[in-house]
Length: 82
Image (cartoon, rainbow, N blue to C red; front, side, top):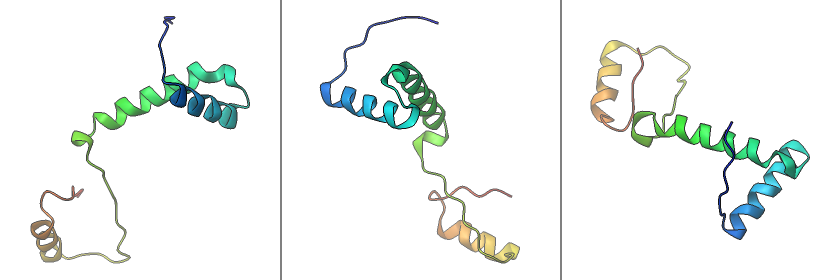
């Protein structure tokens, strides 16, 4: 573990303190909260160029022709999982 000093904007600091108190019941967990946020940011950042991934449940199975048609219509807008 490494200790460092960072300078935060007053508004950001207040938001982080408020969230720490809300989530953990104390402001003393600020480092835990910031580490968690940075870890999650890096996970999200490294997935498919920051594109939002959505999953849709249609309630029925699609035929191959329907899947191919949808892929053509939405190429570049969605990622299909087989």
